[in-house]
Image (cartoon, rainbow, N blue to C red; front, top):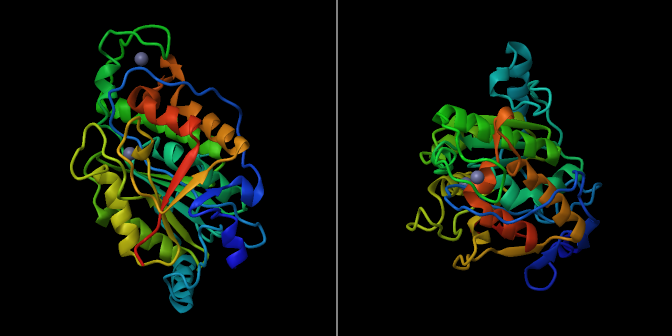
Length: 341
Ligand SMILES: [Zn+2]
Ligand SMILES: [Zn+2]
């Protein structure tokens, strides 16, 4: 077990995914340029865990998934209940391609809690890809609707920028804007090859740890001890619109819930640490992505760069936090935070 961990932790916390198992690129290549305007609002955190030996089933970062949080007896009861009563499929994630519900039983599920559309790509794309590559079922729980971004108003300000042809002449309602962000998120999820996504639709900026706990509890009942729980972490860099406390409150709410779960296999990822000039955050580990992993991450990021208004694609991610995308796809690092001991 120690030997496996070493491949994820080379030299005092600096690790490389590649060192543990090669690249994870399974997505088309994309470009990654920087962006121009910068109104921002959300983005998200990051990270990953080291590559996982397929036969092991757990990532190096995941380390020991010992005893998950739920007893076998309780689990059996829960599954029996599902079989008897039929499971409420509305609570299951769904396949981003077919939209079909993906309900239990699950195979080595890894669940990533994402505050806002784009956080998964900026902060955790390589980590997510590694879990997929390891043969796990990977799920993304998008917690908020992402409606609070100032980019919504920017898209109607009549100006132009280097991201695309044509001016900003699109007056979107908050619902239309949120739906457009979900299109970007779903595109990214498909590029990442995840098994399922769930859209929780909580109002951006109001996420509470209790909201996250509801879903953590659901997963713990529906999964076995192979469950892995990941999400954004507290301790992220401050960013333009939220100076105090550091980090975005929605990101912090996820971490609060993950830590409070006291589940054995929990990891957090920083996002805003990618901001240009951001005060240094203090991750427990910094992962240096290999060339192929970086290329794959960059490709996933193109989901947030597509400008195609006729199809409700407005490059919202790059308008909102272009500097985070630029740094995340050029510095190519992911930043891991561990729960307190
Ligand atoms: Zn965010
Ligand atoms: Zn623009």
